[in-house]
Length: 252
Image (cartoon, rainbow, N blue to C red):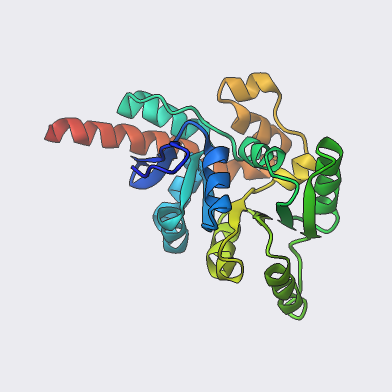
């Protein structure tokens, strides 16, 4: 357990071998680190990512070396409730990112990178409307050519943003952050998946009832039926969790 000056403890737990952190205020912890000049890589972990990380060694390494791993998915919350007997409430990455944006000081900057052309721009407009004092240093879509990338990397270094939101999808965003966080070593780097799409009005987030009842995955499947193969990770995760519990009982 690490204690910071603001007395906000960060406790490391584990789910099927992957780290998950628990703290009273995730956004506060992250911003405290940033204001101390300490760079961070944030991963928002769900069951699908756990299963993908079992076979994707690069993603596995990115999760295990991240500075802050947030319990994003319902599967993570239910794992700790059913298997570990612990209360760890899920904190969707889109809500975490929103809380960070709302709490940035006027002299702190955010950078949006990722999504299809125009999407991150709409997301930025949404946040400028929500928080007029928010300082967004740069917005860049995620379809840069190899020729365009060096200029973008130079901009990153020059702007030196406080927080960098990367919406490239899993695992691309986690691996991209690992490879490029040295460009702005003191920044907070956060993988936000499809958050730009929702903030920009391109997609709609599941209604509150679905979110509150651990059925957000079902609404996403309704919106994007092509995801059904990826959703097979969910029953696999449940099976692995109960097998882990059974094995632990046999050895206790």
